[in-house]
Image 1 (cartoon, rainbow, N blue to C red):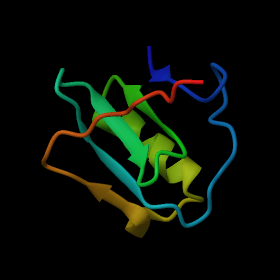
Image 2 (image 1 turned 135 degrees about the vertical axis):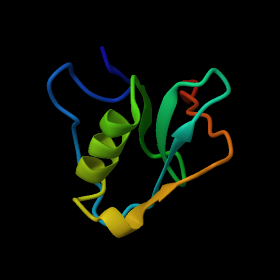
Image 3 (image 1 turned 180 degrees about the horizontal axis):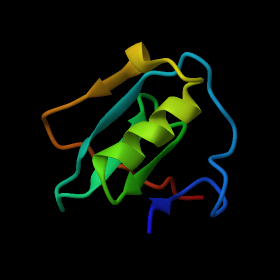
Image 4 (image 1 turned 90 degrees about the vertical axis):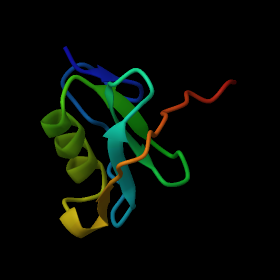
Length: 79
């Protein structure tokens, strides 16, 4: 099961053309994808799902995806 914060179970929602997306692991070892300003992101069961999500959300531009070696966190904004 893939965990996502901003979409339905079968759709990734709105795309953000040209958005830079970081992909990496969080402190717990889960795969995370996060737009640089936090406009979107999510937690995923594996690297492939995180990259698939990042590609969809940034309009299919692989050069705008940065895989990071450091830990990244996806934070859900509070209302």
